[in-house]
Picture 1 (cartoon, rainbow, N blue to C red):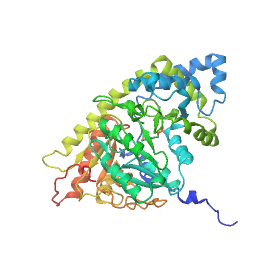
Picture 2 (tube, rainbow, N blue to C red):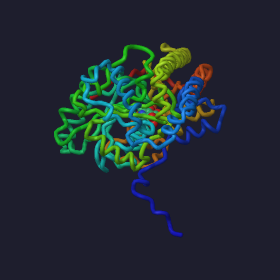
Picture 3 (tube, rainbow, N blue to C red):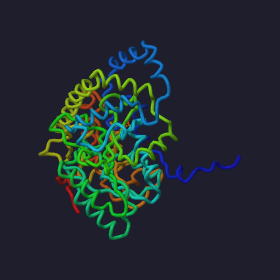
Picture 4 (cartoon, protein in one colour):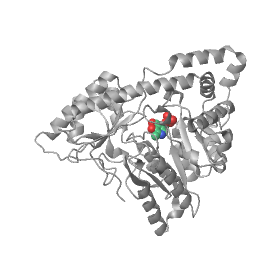
Length: 451
Ligand SMILES: Cc1ncc(COP(=O)(O)O)c(C=O)c1O
């Protein structure tokens, strides 16, 4: 029969290191999972979707259009509504931005955009600069494409743009600027840290992308998946809103978080010269995302049900964040514990920093104890890339991340109930006590930007 001969890309495409832990969560109902980045199940918009589907199918004309193939770029009335929606979020008039609905592409989740962009823009050995830590699924995409991923540290204002400048200057000195194609930022309530990029850093990031576009244009991939889930503080303008000529910023968004991941529909605003090339790759994938789902979304936006739902969700997640933060403060009081965590203004994640002595990665005492207690989290080390070269296809437990800190954890408050959030933190506390028994732990704050 002979051995199967896989592609080089296949060898670079490892299983996500997190899969094992997700599986544990599904198989063991006693476990409370703060690992999976799922949304709140009880607030999914079943009634709203049922009504819209009934309405669409009751009318033969709309039923026939919605159940037919659509276009690769996406349903034009939906793209027009997305255009208006984006302008409203940034408080801008159509004449104040360099894009219109022809520069918007609807995708099968924003995940498809992340992948197809890689296909359209990146060759093996090209450089993408990300945040440290960042969205580990995107790291997987970059590995698969053979990309060199460099990362820049973060502090409470998001990616340290001074450090980004140092990285760009060093790459220029080394003659590697031509290989730099993308800067990836999750600028609202980041996955995994919950941190938000500050206003002045948004401007600075764009200024750096422009200034270093010497050997070809450097693009910013602004992944704003969580933007609509702000539940405290004032909204910030997108980086895209400063890109008046629509040249440097790809704005990627999704209906998964503010509405329903089951509809698996995302969208992006692209610089005009990227639209055609990206659509050719998308055509190869699926020649269009689910047309039926796009009609559902179009109706939900039209009737205002979408905005009402997103508003409701903000309340749901604010309450869950508060429950998680209160439980953490009770379990790890500041005076007696050196556990630290972020306080997100939106999104689904809190980032827990343990003292350096408490390793949180796979095989660590803390993780083993947490599993025995019945609580799952995402080990922080999974969210860092190994600098310089593509990471190994299937990172060994604890092997990915190089010198990355191994004492952090991502806690998702999206899916667990309030009671489960409290119980999960109690279990984390028990695991920490078991790990720390007999050890004297030094206090430790947030690392901050070091350039
Ligand atoms: C930062 C970020 N980007 C993109 C995605 C992909 O979302 P989707 O493909 O459901 O739109 C996710 C999902 O968790 C995410 O956290």
